[in-house]
Amino acid sequence: MRNGLWQGTLLLCLGLFAVAAGAQERVVVCYNYGCQSTATVSFSKRQLAEVRDLLDDALNAAHERELIAVVIGRLLGWAGKQSPIRADRGGNYADEGIHGAMDCIDHATTTTRLLNMLARRGWLHWHRVLEPQVRTRVLIFDHWSAVIEEVPKAPFRDDDPLTSKHYVVDSWFYDNGQPAVVMPLDDWLDWEGPNVEHVEHE
Image (tube, rainbow, N blue to C red; front, top):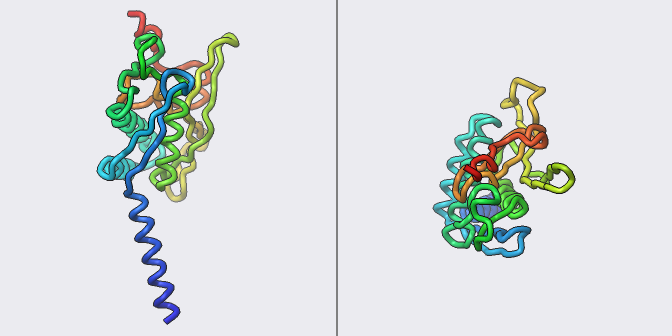
């Protein structure tokens, strides 16, 4: 009798977890620079299932990072259909003064929230979410980004132990809905990455 009760309780808990894992999710997104404005957006069960299935295809940590880039872009694109961030363009110049534009603080904050949503649902298998990082140029220009840490589990450990384990997930570089830039944190701190200023002034 006791075993039957325990098994029933376990099945109920698993069932509730499955419902929660597939339930609709709401996330607050930032825009208009420095999170001056916010909007609450919702992701449907279908959208979340699409994201889950995509991340479940990850073969290793490097592959998961590629998929994270796509997923963040997709989530921001869906969010853009419900909020002014649809107007956001890569960098800070192409959409300067436009309602819904996002600076690096908006992107770092929103992307971190999206990554935490994925982690909370158990969909990140090789990474955990860290606090946003900042890089500074000439003491006047700060650039923030979301950050993840590689935490591969045996027997799926990467072969090269010297590989950088911290990566930025920077959605600021490209237009709303495009994949985020995922690159080693050390390279990003050295100001590597897409030359958005060059593109914006062409």
